[in-house]
Length: 182
Image (cartoon, rainbow, N blue to C red; front, side):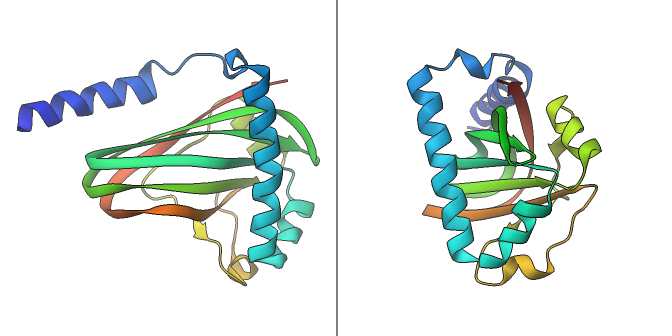
């Protein structure tokens, strides 16, 4: 049983972090349009949950909205989602999120994620595919008023909103991103 878990873990790691070099634009035009519409809907729902987030959208140099991230795990977990990147309030490209985690975890869930970039340097790191989050990175779960005290860490601020599912988790992992300009 242990060897099966190790094999699956190695495969998941290679898939998510080693062989993830495909072009986001390889997706169909219909799928891209759906992601763009979902991103606008997700933004509206984040603002409905906490109207104070408006200041982050207005003041950030740029941001990425991942409207549908799916996550699942049985010991070894993974997550993936597609999103839209914005700079100066304008759409500039598509983004892909992948995540791998190892530890005590079981279940599945769907959530939304927004990453705000404080300045041009932070946004440029993202556009150059140099942004990765480790276990030390923390995201703020959006509830009424949650964004009021949120702070940038290394020029980045992350918010999540659960959509559904149930996940038991005490794990270590990281997120990796890929950006493709329009």
